[in-house]
Length: 368
Image (cartoon, rainbow, N blue to C red; front, side, top):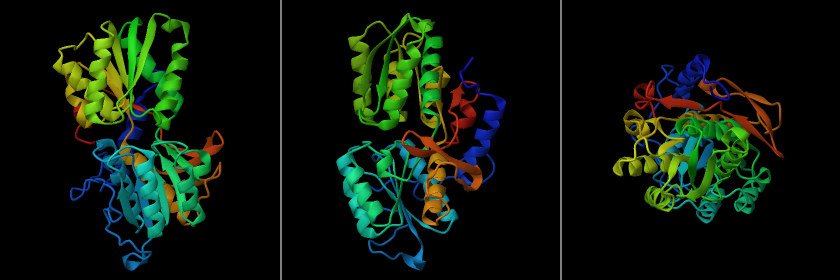
């Protein structure tokens, strides 16, 4: 039924992959003390509490991750996985995220990290191009730069860690909503920010999938942006429902957006009238999947995305990896990974997205 077949083999591999925490039992590892939470804009905001000078205790290498913004459960899990990988290799993890999802706020953090003389920076970019001067400055200072989740341009990093094939994500989301609404009706997309590289790439593939004649009775009426902020995502969902009273489906390729949309549809009693799918955290979406407000959705394990980025950062700093096509390296419990082409740059692919529905959500909601 699905373009890339969510087979039993994939289920098994993802169950094993959730060991991105490294405990080997299919459960995601957690850090109860800090939960991988971001610290805001403080330069010392690290789970491994380094000082702001060039030398950390014991001479451990310093690996920073900069997410889009604080208060985002997806980002917190991603940073949790990054921290786990870094500590497995004896490094110091510095976890950072600004209060607001802007390029300007991330640039300030990059400058702070350059001053701290970190060994690497992994960043989920709020803008693909605006960060280039700051990231090039970091690389010129000898800092290994990579992006994850939301890519910066190829001139701004050595390699990108991609959660899944963008084409498969985009096409699958359209296939899913089409099945939910019977192949006919108005649909809308509730995205994150208008500059988010990953969101925009997925949306482009959604539009390409819609060009197929079999979707001739489906009309994309609006792409709305909730900026990965809960309250704004709620407001944007409400605005969609008001502006398009005949709306049949909403695709939210953002964990914040899909949870916000699920709440709005639930509160308004629109179960079965406006269908919802997208990319969500099982722990946040379980109630909406179990109630039928969201028949099914997709995601990968964000802990594994961060974990893979952590191992890639360590391989770059250790000289095992340069970010060139064809290179291979060991990514801990995720096994061997390969660097592949990505336009004019390179990337490391985690794997295919996974389908969550009423048959498996009870198992996964306790994982992440």
